[in-house]
Length: 496
Image 1 (tube, one colour):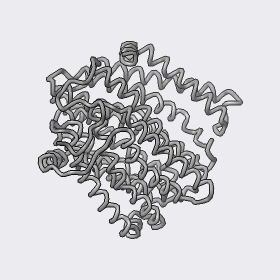
Image 2 (cartoon, rainbow, N blue to C red):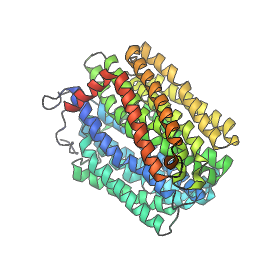
Image 3 (cartoon, one colour):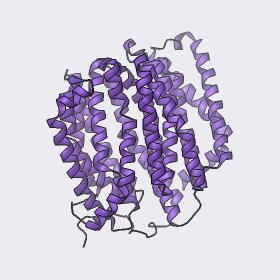
Image 4 (cartoon, one colour):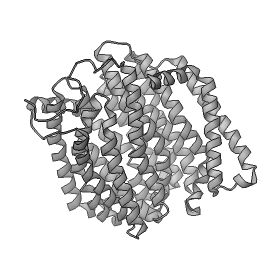
């Protein structure tokens, strides 16, 4: 008898998916739903950072960024690959989820208590003593996000991303409303920390409403399986979150909180396409790859389609953001130093998105050792780069990110080649070529608008909107002409 209720409509382990839907169709539908979820949840975080740039000083934005980065690391430590474990287990997923609930919430509670008690020395070590109160507030969210993570792991198992709309979208709405209201009334950096805590408390409750009811339990067999999987994947997940958060304390300690604020604004804008596209495709691709591998099916075609879709769907916003980087002053002239940083971080973003997609395949073909080695190599390269280049300013920190991420792409491709899961060269190179041509077309469009009086002012809101529309049209037109087969595939999946 199970102590947890699986997500309604989920299939039993090893059974065929319900209905007559093909795996490709379910993946496409999952991508659309998860895309909407990320638009509301993750996308709102990026938008919130931009809004806060109008209310907070550079230093205040830097302090809250450091606190949130620390909590992000805690969230990964407490979960240790929950989504993967629940998705891939051959056991009763409800019992696995109940066991993971006990483990994750327990770890989250310990981490929260530790952060509350040691907030001041932690903030001092990070070079931002003023962030201690923010660390205490934000850390209280950890047990709640741990519970919600397990609940959503059940939804991921069967690509049932539609159910994530309520907990992710609802909690994001609460975070946004509370944070903006507090910031607008003069509560400063504490606004975001309090908003995040409110959203975290609400999220597991909304998961229950969505149908993911998990009661904590203990199954020794499930715990043992989870431990074996997380011994390798867990450290890799921690390294992965360090890769996207270690730069903040490095910049804070070397350059100060004001520099963190400038860097954070550029990073958040450059991070949006990764969150909106790569995380969506990655979350959908892993269970698809796992299913193909269980059935002994060939994976290269699926890998190629996911990689090409990433290059098109993430490439568009990255190219457009880089070409329009100088228009960041539309927020305020004081954010002008973020423009060159944004250009470099757009190159980093597309590289990080690509290596993330490739490493999803590495994990799916059961190469956990290679996955961990790639993650460690990336982290070492990044830390060394930050130490060497950050003293030259925030642009140096961005360059450290750019170099480190692209160095690890070739080794990831080598691992996939040896595993027989390398993306097909011809189609991928055709998409890369289209991406380069589309970037050239966007540069030509921007050159033209720079010579039109009303649109040439970087601080013009009208210029920002017109430029964005023209650049998006140019990019999509070139990609449609150079990758017609991919466009047909995407249309087919959407219709299916």
